[in-house]
Length: 435
Image (cartoon, rainbow, N blue to C red):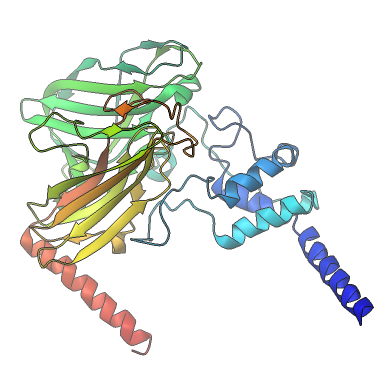
């Protein structure tokens, strides 16, 4: 009886091993890499290795397994157990894709038949505009910062020039923008940045960038107004060189406009900064005081003055940042967690763009409640020194907390119409499922 049990166990192990052996790079793993990874993991990009060829992928197989099992790669830090889970820019791997990569590595990372390889993906060159193919044309307008010498001393550096802009003859409406650090060095040293047009009509914060968030396209019939006339483009660039110099670095922003004379149905404010580090009338960040080895939780409250469509959510903290949630409190007292970034990483500044059918619709008088958690312990892998007290500051080793939220304000009639359309669609889906 014992021999039979051992035989069955050995047969089971052999079968499992055979199944694992059937997973190969060429047929099973390369399609996953080509679809999800190689936009960054290729030659002349900021990622540390190329995953376009088998030999390189095999060399890093164990590291790849570790990163995907921990859901550190591809970078997608949303808590998948709470809040909205439908996104336009979803970048996480499925459980099946993770299991395929794990089986491949555990089987010794076999290559398989090279004839099974899918075609190499079409990838834009590092200095190309990523949105050019989608629009079928280069940007309609390009604005540039003035040069800045990024020195390789590992310290945070900021550059904030104001560049005169001669102006457009007519008002135009932005349908998309792309923030493009220089290639190849700028991709390695620009951590995040903003560009704002200042005119007599007021400021237009038209472009925002963070590692992992290079461009933004506005939903159909929604745009951002670019006024006619002269002005200045004000830049706010944060460089984090980590030993890499970039002499005479120039950042560009490309804008794609709606056709001349066409005005979208709605005007968006784009990404709006909503502070979490605040204490009523006290100075900003006065509520941040994280003890050595400790944690801290702070909250920020923002009242919605107009009916609002929320397009996206992008937390911003520094190295001790651990998580941030965005919760809606409706006028009737209902509470709903809209999104939670539960594994925040300062070296990624991802904008989580809700799918069209999932974008939150908030009535006037709603409250957005943000909760940020800081971890100053040794368990935080990005913590440079858990023995230090941490206070508010602009440097990566200091702390701050705010969210960039994509906001489009609606009039009451449009808001009511959108709510009714969603409710009707939900009823139709329930009826179709045999409610």
